[in-house]
Length: 127
Image 1 (spheres, rainbow, N blue to C red):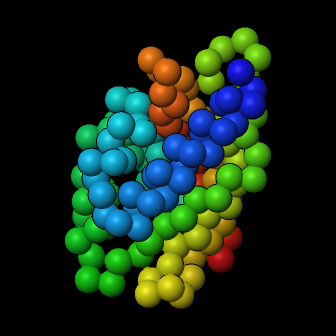
Image 2 (cartoon, rainbow, N blue to C red; image 1 turned 45 degrees about the vertical axis):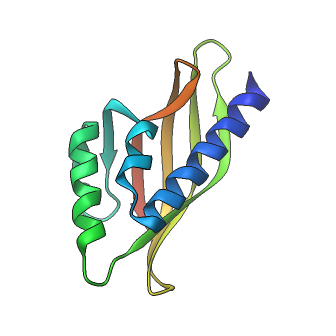
Image 3 (tube, rainbow, N blue to C red; image 1 turned 90 degrees about the vertical axis):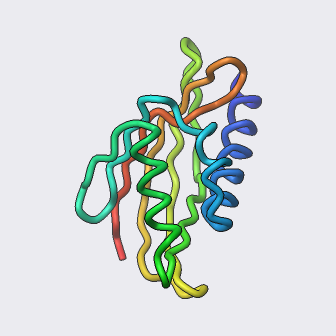
């Protein structure tokens, strides 16, 4: 399960990044657990639930000068006893190709019905 989980989560993260770049809410929804929680990097705002997160992304996508976020996994650690895994990596937000903010993140994933979904993410802004 370890190698399969690692690859599946990396592929799901790539899908999420592509959806963010393309402003594709329909592609983001299936990657989020119903009760997903995100803690943002700068102000530690808590966005709780799939619907709330999709609404937040919809607002982001409507911005005149839209920030495009990219998350890059450095390490994925699957649990040997439960269908869960932790992803640790770095993120950046860019406007028109110029990085405006960056930092570190951690995400908890769960395998549900053969698909990996994000249950929780926490971000730290470093620059």
